[in-house]
Length: 303
Image 1: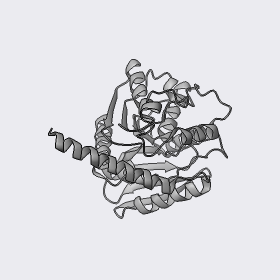
Image 2: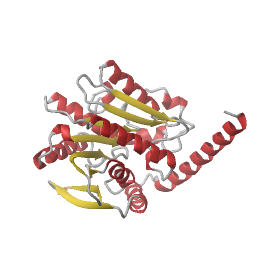
Image 3: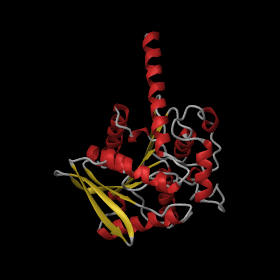
Image 4: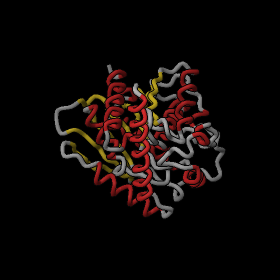
């Protein structure tokens, strides 16, 4: 490629990351309640799509939301999405920035749920809620192999933790996992915590440390149910991972990919050049392309 074009693309990516950094700064707040409200506001603005239906449900006292396309669509399979937010923020409403795209790209129903948040409800509250939702789907008549688990950031952690729990109980596992910028290592030992610290426009070490201390203040952070990176992945279903080249959690994805390869799990990974943590939320071409790749993977494993 011409050097001039290279420079122009580089400059464009830097400008984009600067914009993302500024936008994220408007949402993030050390006041957790304000942070949560700001995220919901973003979800309400960016996540409402006329062509989709949003149906609220109660799952044994826990709020949940079905997102589905307003046309004939595939009913056999369902996507169970675990939202991100460092285990301290996030909701089904904020997650519409992803669940709407997943439903539209796959024509499958997507279920998201508002698990208990830290610090009010530290580990294992979120994990127990995820198991309750899994059991709810089974009671609805879905088989384990009819469910595709997806998750972004802490939601990727929760999805992996749920499969590890199902495996430990010798239960049937989901058909596959779709993970967007998964947070897999709460010991923060990955190389990208240093190499990407200045590049990531969304996350920084101080924020991550705050989330860890809120979620698992008294827990061994190498516990596989807290840091799935250290889990036993033998027998896991197929996994697809997406990460941004410039995110501080890049090592969490790269090392997870290697661990899955070592366990002989069918796994694919794409690292998107110039992108950041959970860039799929953004209204941009790279996000749309990534969601199409998620859909391709899901169609592939559902054949």
